Length: 337
Image (cartoon, rainbow, N blue to C red; front, top):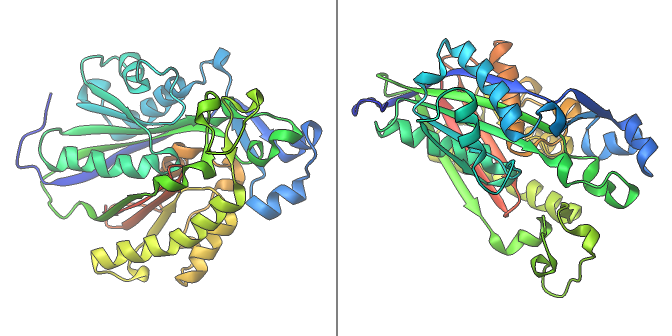
């Protein structure tokens, strides 16, 4: 079922989130590797994260299905109302089929459109811009955007792998959008960028041919996240404020005009620096990395669901979504809700 051409506004109608049953605290990590709670919190702001178990159906499609069910319930819709399902993930259950197709079948709507996109940690922001245009153009009336990742499957929980194992967690979040006759609702400004020359700062090699030039990887690196932490941190710190300013300039608004900044949760220090750079009240830039860690494409919809359900994001608000990650990728999406 498609929407009627002529619908111009895009309205957020429901959100949901899902996390695995198991938590992994910093104290737990102290038993697995040479690290400490103080060291992790000081450098990342993370205190705990969730770790998935495929035996408990906590894959991308499993977590995504749970989160989508909650979002449909919040929106007062059934799965049959969905015209399109987009799943942003870099850890799909399998290379084929797309996880979005599995989720569509699991919620009882195997005939709708469904596909995955991979923008790494920026994937949900890229998905917001794609989903918005699918609705804005009048082709689709109701679109579900899922952000889900299970990065624990790409970690080594030993001292050798602590550079990334302390950071990443697993989760899924969903936002559902519908066409609305009010043309003022939807994206005010957006931006999407990539610098493929920086790919070697964070990547997941499958074989020796995936190594950067001049680097010989041990077989133990295959299938695990390889990250230049200092390089990624420098990229994010330098890019984040410029991305905010670029988006504000495109929209013709001031930083104070935005009611909430919903940012990818990669590092608490990066978020704090951006807040201080624009002199934002602490309540305007949401942080939950301490409870979830970096959940990649799920981090922004996790924040959004918590904000919506607590009443801190509501109709009438301007909300800026910001992401940056592997690729290297960075992007924004400023909405009028």
